[in-house]
Amino acid sequence: MAVPKRKVSHARKNKRRANWKLSAPGLVKCPNCQELTLPHRVCKSCGFYKGVEVIKMD
Image (cartoon, rainbow, N blue to C red; front, side, top):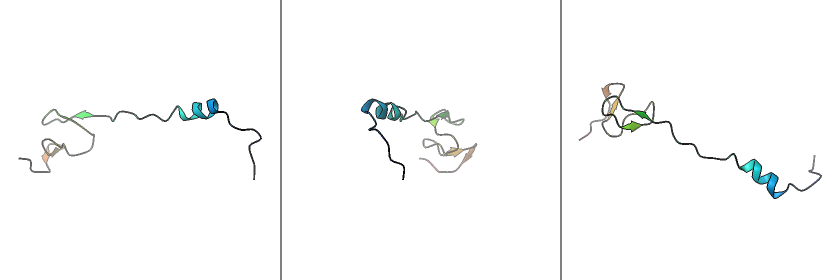
């Protein structure tokens, strides 16, 4: 098996880890109630998906 010849420095290791970021989810407006929702999912506030009521909301 190949073995590293030298120890990986803290700086080099941390530079590699610097790209682990969270990204904000892409939100779209619901065409029915104008709430921000995740794309391709039923709106949690009105229960509509593609203009059809999927879930009855009170």
